[in-house]
Length: 229
Image (tube, rainbow, N blue to C red; front, side):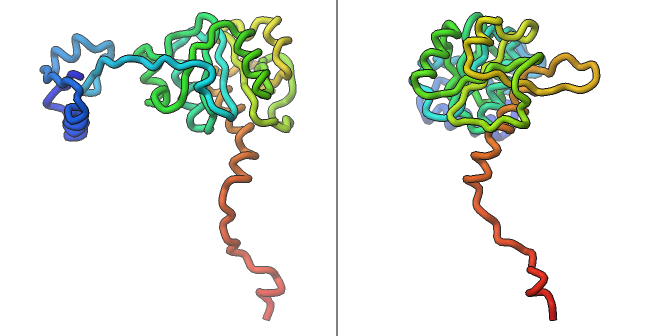
């Protein structure tokens, strides 16, 4: 880990914790840190770490997101962030998707990549077969056909499958998934940003689970009979 000693106390505290854990910490001047960082305004510290080698079986039971041929690292990282916020079990990347551990993807994930499994699954067909065997219902997302997301009775566990930003899922993969779902759009809008669409669908599908798990707050309303004198 390298750090600019002029940065905040929070950065200094993090470096102390890293040193206590056996991490080698080096102090660099601000101008040096700027040169080694890919960010215009570095956060004050940087680290070299070994990435996790995760597999499909590392994703536990629950809903998940599958991203096929997603090329924009910012989109990818943002979807990982949404996936964590919605309580999914993990994210699977297929085809030639962007590197989830690239700097832009990591920044867009805001740390979520380190908290939920993000797995390179290989070919989409093989990934679907793997989760079919685990009883996961696959939903292909489409901008031009499928069930209206607001009317879907979501089964669990399920997988939302998103395709390339420009071309979507290949026709064969649309047919390969068990069901198709869409977000009806108004006006002349043809499609939504990938992370926006993921957020809408993930929170819509998670709502029944959240409502059954949420504690019931005591009512503050009185019945008419109780309020009458």
